[in-house]
Length: 296
Ligand SMILES: Nc1nc2c(ncn2[C@@H]2O[C@H](COP(=O)(O)OP(=O)(O)O)[C@@H](O)[C@H]2O)c(=O)[nH]1
Ligand SMILES: [Mg+2]
Image 1 (cartoon, rainbow, N blue to C red):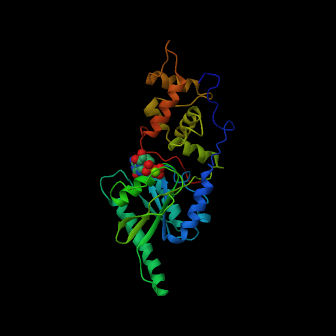
Image 2 (spheres, protein in one colour; image 1 turned 90 degrees about the horizontal axis):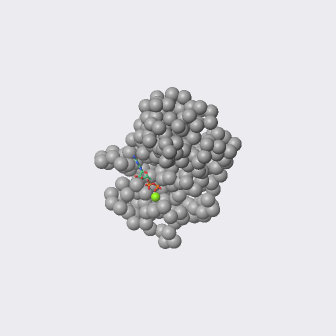
Image 3 (cartoon, rainbow, N blue to C red; image 1 turned 180 degrees about the horizontal axis):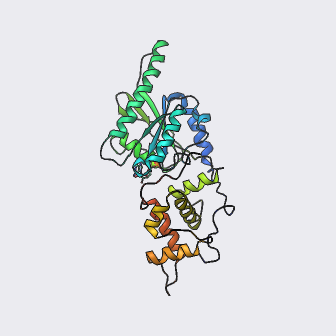
């Protein structure tokens, strides 16, 4: 990056519009499988409870019982994220927050308890129709990087087969046993959020692993600086010694470069390196616990 193509902010410059072709395919497949499913786990990232949510999921899963699983709770700003928990609960969601990296199984237990609770209703209805109760069948859906595979492995208690980032389902359906009462469809439904909302698109690009194809690293880094300055100025100061942002970000970048030794030969600031540092710092959690969405 040169000084001239530097970072005048992201507004208007880049419109993120990712809507991969296989999205339609996944949606069709979920629609086909839905009648086999009793409960849907919608997996979202606690650091972006709005931006990582699949906006039109209601159209897709209709009135299936659903649990909103908010992963990465260990990385989020609990005070802000809890406002979303409350908001979603008020909207009628069953919400469970989890740290899937934790050594204890509390999160998984909360999810299973909530599922058993929902299955009581399902089996009551079956009984009324003269049918035998049966094990609950679960489908996991969520955007890339939300924690779907990790959740599957935690639920099953081992590295489950068929778990991966390959979009779309395997041809034959297979079920993984969680316990005697619950089975899981072996491949999760990978979906993307609606990204007409450019703010949400940038939050997502900042915190997820799918950004590289979508947006260049300088755009993401500048977005992160602005967002951190808006929401967590003290964390920005702590990490980079920055107390304000200049309009074209040149001074800001120079400051970070000298503080972090991101200099090219001749001692001038290496802007590309600085962008990389900013993006990595957020990704690695070096700013501390953060939540980038706010309830309006
Ligand atoms: N700290 C933390 N990291 C998590 C949590 N859940 C998932 N991750 C990490 O997030 C990344 C994406 O998880 P993955 O299960 O592959 O997401 P998927 O794309 O939805 O299948 C991995 O590096 C996981 O280790 C969590 O609750 N806490
Ligand atoms: Mg995965």
